[in-house]
Image (cartoon, rainbow over all chains, first blue to last red; front, side, top):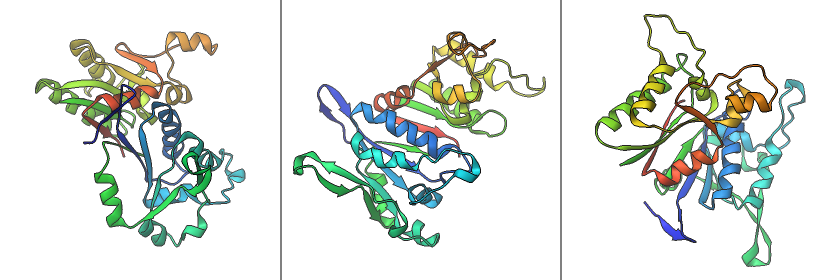
Length: 142
Length: 130
């Protein structure tokens, strides 16, 4: 378990696992609410998208006909909250007939690099995802 | 060891709350510390005092309330999740202009920050749900 002391507080590696489709159940929306609140706590935050969770990041979502709010634009704001590591499992995409081109182009601005825009989405294999998860201190699964 | 417990499903429909309760009880019996039990998603429905299960069944809410009393447990219902689902304490009912409140003894309503804080303070955060 890695715990560094920073400004008198504990910094842990927090992982939010997103496993479910954006609509159909409320898990994805309420997971994002935790991420946004959690961003205020200055922890080392990552998100993972596996299984149907990869649908949360698809572009051009349109929920007009189901009467439920399309919350996918909120993912674009994550960079402003210093949430810059979104791990997407390649196999989960492929199993659903998706490629990275179907996902939103999410970026964050690196203040240490003249505010250069950098990609937030990190494509990983199932094996690599295991390692990423093994590295975490706190995993919240939605 | 310090545990944080998260309950993500409502009572009776799903076994998550029973399992979380049994885990919490067992952990306390072994001398571990429970820093907080946080109820999220439909899990907030565990905290309404208006549940009336059949008399030959367990009363999940009363079990939690009793355990909280015995061990001074901190049972927290997420305010955003609770408001969506009609779980209000006296203050919130007043503030929202509602004619009733229903939070059970031993539970309190607070923000999602309490979940993050539990993750920071606990050695292990254990989630019960789908």
